[in-house]
Length: 113
Length: 113
Picture 1 (cartoon, each protein chain N blue to C red):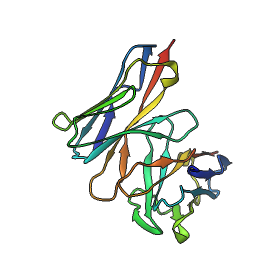
Picture 2 (cartoon, helix red, strand yellow; picture 1 turned 120 degrees about the horizontal axis):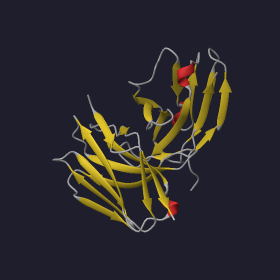
Picture 3 (cartoon, one colour; picture 1 turned 60 degrees about the vertical axis):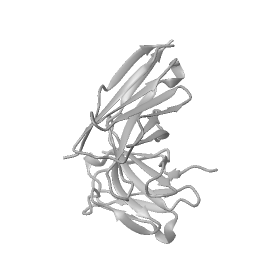
Picture 4 (spheres, rainbow over the protein chains, first blue to last red; picture 1 turned 180 degrees about the horizontal axis):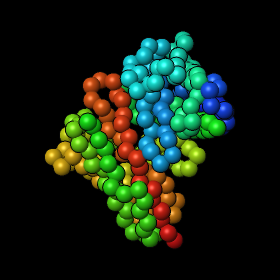
């Protein structure tokens, strides 16, 4: 089966600009996660969707980050405006249940200059 | 607050030896614990899941133990190979039914031929 797809793989922007990331989960997976992984750290959960509803967004900086999962399949994560400290890899993962194994995409490496 | 620690940032061993990685946690009562492997430029890949009522789990050359009294998990790779070189992440569920994972920082394993 196809894995989790993410695009773009790399993005370089100036601070205060906007950026959006796209994720296509494994077919049939109801749960989708967005993580932020700063260099040398483990992934940190930003938001979790169950179908098209938000389950947990407690660690999402809502003043600048937003995410949606229309129709319960693909998802986009947006940062507006970006700050230097947003430089990180943004990982998307999906699972078939809320307590199951998570399958990760390759990530998008964001550099904010 | 909830905290996860992986004992060392880096571990260097000789090919053929057993690698042992440690994951300690505080202020948690996780229902399960997972181990992931992450190669440079890629997303984490699931390896093993062990539940709170299980003492040990094996998969090929991998073995995981889970001691809820010590609040510790040990991850062993026997007969290690250079291809096992990667960063290994420990992840605990936050509790509840949401399936949110909290990741440790990871241990970078290098297996020398």
